Image 1 (cartoon, rainbow, N blue to C red):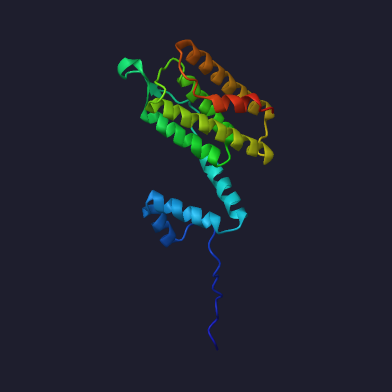
Image 2 (cartoon, one colour):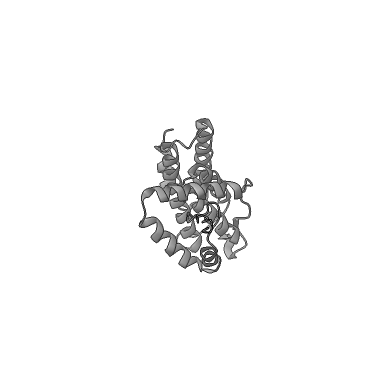
Length: 201
């Protein structure tokens, strides 16, 4: 009598990563992982990018810190000028991850604290601090665009809370403008201010 054949299931197991792929992920450099991901997302149907950002949002929600950032700038430099701290770098990386994954409103909430942390600091027109503030201005504009897409995608369940987040940011930007005008500096958040002025929700 022939031996009973047991069908071999060749479908991939769901919920875990192949051992060799996991070994690559664990050991590849950041640049290699970025290149691999960009290639994967660019050469596959758009649904893969949609799934990827959904997984990214889920992970970011799980690891999200609800505490506002602190110690983002220091005034201990010579002539009383401000300088960024390492905590600012980590905060901006978090902000960019959030709005890049489609969590614009959460990133705007953090950016409000970043803008407010600049109040009372001083910088020169072309120093490193001014360049960093210009980058933050761009981040705000990008986060606003991400927030608009979040609304358009139907992922905002509480419009009142979203409006509150926008108003908190508007208030922080206005306070920054008043502060910079008082000491005669160049206001760093012009693009953000213009975007917020014309954004109606």
